[in-house]
Length: 122
Image 1 (cartoon, one colour):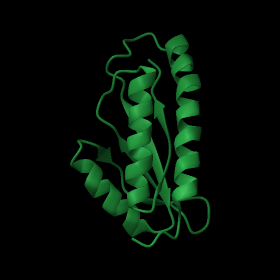
Image 2 (cartoon, one colour):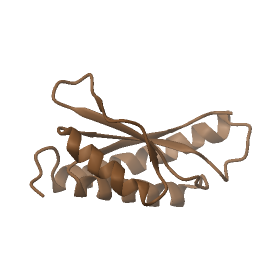
Image 3 (tube, helix red, strand yellow):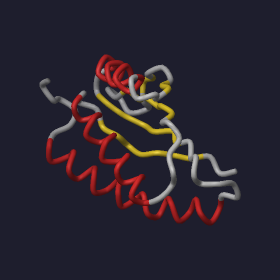
């Protein structure tokens, strides 16, 4: 696939950036959340310059039990956005880092970029 949105250098930088955010996000969750963190439901986000790339990524993720919303136009011109719900995960740093690397690499395969995750605080 011809990459027009991302490249190998951006992929590697994004993996490191997202893993760095995992630790601070996990600490925040542990401080704010009152329910069990063993079955954490994450909403994950992706961007690309082409709607069809995100649709293809969404189709791939369905095979791993992800549930995606419709692709939307981003507020940034020429960008599109996809949100998806990941299967429940145990909220420990190793699992979050594995998930982050997986999502960064699989989104790169479709010329998309993983932009992070969010969890509901209960």
